[in-house]
Every structure is written in structure tokens, then in C-alpha cells.
Amino acid sequence: MHRTAPIAAALLAATLPWATPCLAHGTPEDEQAIRNVIVEMTEGFNKHDARASTRMYTPDADLITVRGERFRGTTEFEKGLASIFTTRAREATHRTLNVSVRFLRPDVALAHVTNELSGLIAPDGGRPPPHQELSLRVFVKEGGEWRVAAFHNTLVQPFGAPAPKPQP
Image (cartoon, rainbow, N blue to C red):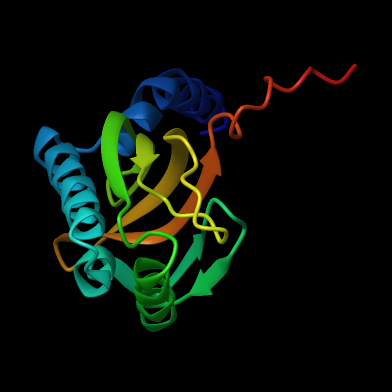
């Protein structure tokens, strides 16, 4: 009996590296469903429709805007986005430049999305130039539907600023 334990442990250790990545793979259908949600988010934004832009979030979702504003939950985010659509983003549009999806588990995925945002209106009425934003979106599959549980957005490079220098 004692001799079989090391053999079983060795077999488990030998198969674990191949088994673990399989657990993280989503299906092509799941990846396409996530990409469809991203398109829906962009379309809702471009229509300046706060409800359509937030329909896909979980009720307790966390969202951080490119300006560092934090919204908790779909209701709070929809209200905040509606306000943004009546002020600085009333003429703004997103154009998706790149999407990459990586599954952490079959029901959890990360999406990195690069968008170009144009048409913003500054508080002084000026028009900042178009810029790129990179968002990290955490998707969860609930009841067969992919939803956004967290969203964090950042500027790819601030307006007219040089790229940051690496710290030693």
C-alpha cells in the first residue's frame, strides 16, 4: 500500500500541468458571446443610452472610469453615465481598436479592450483631441449569460503627454 502512494502522487503531478490549462479554456462560443457584449457596450455608449450601456453589468459590479470616478452597482453606474452623457460626453463616440479575451475559468474571463474616444467636451467648452483608452473588464457567466463584474479604464497615453519614463 505504501508503494502505491508515491506512484499515484507522481502520476497526479505528471498530469496536473496538462489538466490545469484545460480548466481555464472557454469555448469559441463563449469568447464570441463576450465579444458581442463588448460590441453592445460600445453601441450603447455611441447612442448615449445609459441603460443600454449598463444592461450587461452584474448588480454589484465595480466600475472605475478613466478619470478615477468609481461607481458601485448597475444602478449607480447607469445614473452616473446618464449624467456624463448630458455633459462632457454628449457628443462622444467610441471606436474599438483591439479586443483580447483570456479565460481564467470556464465561467470567468478577462477582456482587454482598446478604444479610441473622440468628441469629448471640456468644462471650458474646448474639444480635447481623440485619445485611446485601455479597459480591463472582468466577465462572469451567470445563468448562461456573460456579464461584466468589474471594469477599469485608463488612458493609453494622456493627452499630449510624453510616455512615462520607467522608474529605476
